[in-house]
Image (cartoon, rainbow, N blue to C red; front, side, top):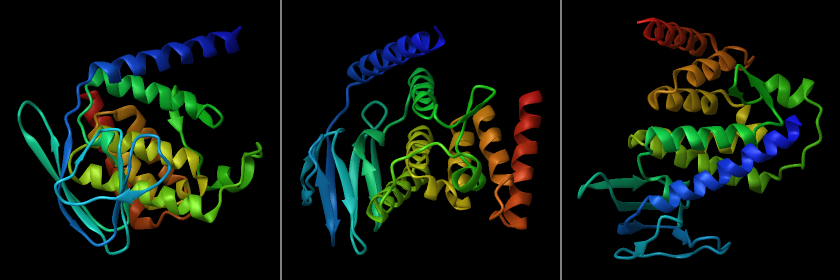
Length: 244
């Protein structure tokens, strides 16, 4: 019965997500400047193609920069405003992430991400991405092996999440990082990646999720004393803020 209810909930969530996306009217994203190795993938296509200054891209497109590649794009923002983003080398950015989510959209997408991560641990209804111990030890559930090339792609996507964070797109930064770390446990075992997710959750005003993620960082053996001290301070500040 619980499984049936869970499946029904997932179907409703997916339908709701599609409706929310349909209701959001994106504008075209213009390519302002290109330098070096930069490519674009259109929609669900798997092939990467060249892109040049002056091109207009759609929200379902994805941009990738190589080791020496950079790009400057202009995306529609609130009202008639335009947001300028500079993409540094070695990033992958889904252009649908270059936007600010409403609170309703954020909570819907966060819930869907928790559903996708249901093979991992849930604590107090909060996503708990595996720590190093879970990745390499206690969690023995079978998973499809991830190749080095796939992990490299995941790292480029995480770099893209950092770009989103640096440009104030905290909600989509958190969701993208959450998705990547779920799919690539090896990247979830790296402290800096987990801190990025925790900080993005905090900036997105997801206090409970941020505290949960910061707490997971404290449990990582690879986290240094300086990092742990900084994380403990953030946890305390978030708890005080919640009591205020």
